[in-house]
Image 1 (cartoon, one colour):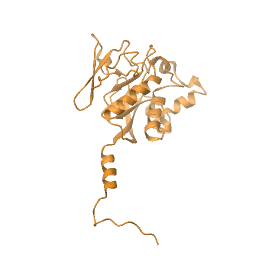
Image 2: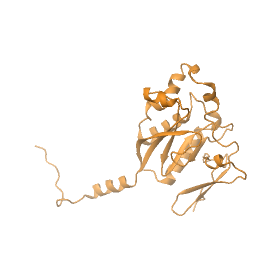
Image 3: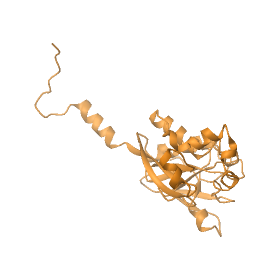
Image 4: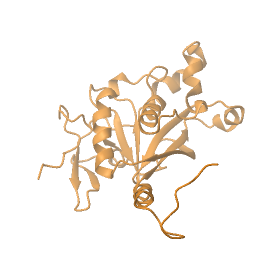
Length: 224
């Protein structure tokens, strides 16, 4: 016979349970937002194939990885489910994270050091590889396999990838990014372009920099 500990009174909540409940309340949901790179996906999607861009949504922002010509961060943030140049398809709930907004921001700044814009490769190191690494580090699970299946197949047969997709579809970042970061009192980040004459599309993309500050795309909050 198994004996289970009795609570002090019916319906009461132990301190451990309260701590668990409080911890769950503070967790932020993690979504994978998937976009079509081509209308052909309307046909390919239903057979488990397609050409997709993906981003990670958490704390009210979406983070992705794109190509540019500079040896600096290719990680950017946009409003969720509205990445310019792509057609939003669906969101997939990946799990949750205990990281606060500021902790996640720091995590992304560190990770961006591995994802420079000039290292982007549609087969070996694309936006879906980036979101997969984020997902693995935060949840211990990969993103759904169908999201990056084209890269897996293309690694064996690059001829499957149209040249226009290989070259132009991922280049949606501004040519000369320059952004600053202003933190409000509750710790949330407000990113705005510090350059003049920036295009509307450029204003919607915000590049992160590595903490060493080799490229000042984001102005870090000064220590207090």
